[in-house]
Image (cartoon, rainbow, N blue to C red; front, side, top):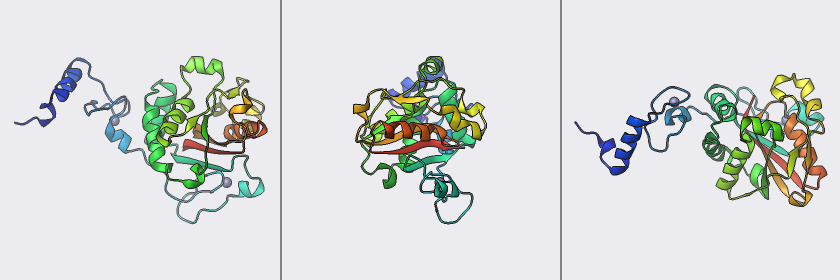
Length: 247
Ligand SMILES: [Zn+2]
Ligand SMILES: [Zn+2]
C-alpha cells in the first residue's frame, strides 16, 4: 500500500504534527491534514461563494435573481457619501460562519483567507480600485478592540492591501464614541447610533487621497456612510468601500 502523502521529509513533519497536535476544522470538524490548513479546512473554504448576479453599482446592494444591474431607489433619492461600494458575497452559509469565527472567536488568521477571497472576487473591479491611493480599515473603539483582541477590519484591510500592493492608512480614522454594536439595533436606529462616532486624527494622511474603506459586514451601510463623511470632511478626495459580506 502506498502512502504518497508521507514520503517526503515535509510530510513526515506533518504526520508528526498530526499525531501529537491533531487539529480540526472549526466548521466541519474534519481533520486539518493538508499543507497550510489552519482553523478551517480547504473543503470549507471551497464552499465560500462570491455573489455573481446584479447589483446597484452605487451602494453595491445585491439584487435577488436575474436582471440588469441598475441604481437602486435609495441611491436615486440620495447618493451615499462613498461613490462605490462592493461586497464579496452574501452574509449567509459558510461565508457567515467564516466571518463569525474570524470576528468573535479571535481567529485573526482567517483574515488572510478572507482577503484572498476578496482579491479573487473583486480584485479586478476597476470601479473599485482605479486610482486608489490607500486602504482604510473601519476602526473599532479602543475599548472594544481591547475586548476583542484585534480589529477584524484592520486585519482584512491589511492583508488585502498587501495583495493589491497598496498602502494601508491605519490610525488616521478613529472611533471616539463607543456606541452599542450596530447588530443590536434596528435599521432606523443605526445611522443615529454612529452619528459623530468617528474623527480623523491626522488629516495629512487622508487629505487629497482616493481612499478605499474596508469593513467586514455591510447591513444598512450606516457605518461606512459615517466613516466616508468623516474622511471627506477631513479633505479626502474620494471614498469607496469594500466589505467581505452583505446581510
Ligand atoms: Zn471544514
Ligand atoms: Zn444603491
